[in-house]
Amino acid sequence: MKPTAVIADDEPLLRAGLRDALQAAWPELEIVAEAPNGAAAVHAVREHQPAFAFLDIEMPVMNGLDAARAIGEAAHIVFVTAYDRYAVEAFERGAVDYVLKPASGERLAETTKRLKARLGTPAASMDALLEELARRVAPAPTLQWLQASLGNAIKLVNVDDVVYFESDTKYTRLVTRDGEALVKKTLKELASELDARHFWQVHRGTIVNIRAIASVASDEMGRRQITLRERPEKLEVSRTFAHLFKAS
Image 1 (cartoon, rainbow, N blue to C red):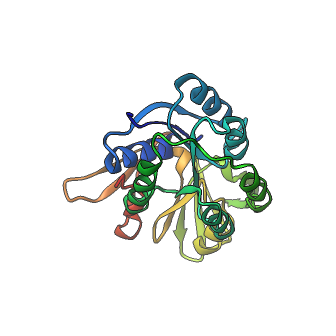
Image 2 (cartoon, helix red, strand yellow):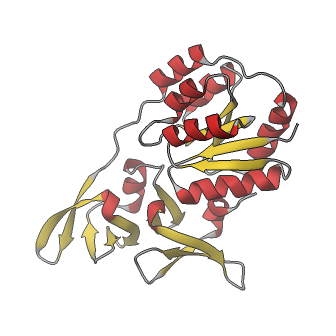
């Protein structure tokens, strides 16, 4: 039986990273469809009847838990999630596979080993586990608005409009598509308050909104650089954080 899978994540960059990591860990696995939300994932599973469905938990329209309920026993479910100790404990107790974002080759090697053993077997009911996960995986409140200084003026900036944050002595410089301003918070403080699903620290002095990333490439010296969608400058990825953009 040829192994097939559907992957679902609302972030194109993360979806592509998971696809590449899966292809490296299990070359025989065919990704028959990709979905940007849970509803599209359910449709793709019904249409393609894959053996496995990799579902991000937090997605618009329909989240991964609701998608798993709708998929039922039509496919083996693998949840994709940012690290959450309580969710991971629930996954492990329920013997359900999960992948932490960003996907690592080591974790995927363990996951694919178990999935190969399940190939051709019926998927188990997950009703009880899904109820527990629904209680445990509740989004924590995250920073949404910032007071920023622009000359002598103060303005409110929605963090979703920020392309990246950069350390600037005692302050932090926030950069949007149209300009920049200063915030009276350190980068460390911002890192603890921002939504870790969307804002990644890529350098000791830089946090980037991953939704603003166009691509990540290595130069001739092997250093990774981020190209942004709506800004001309490139951002350096330090060695400490290079693993975030490795497919395997």
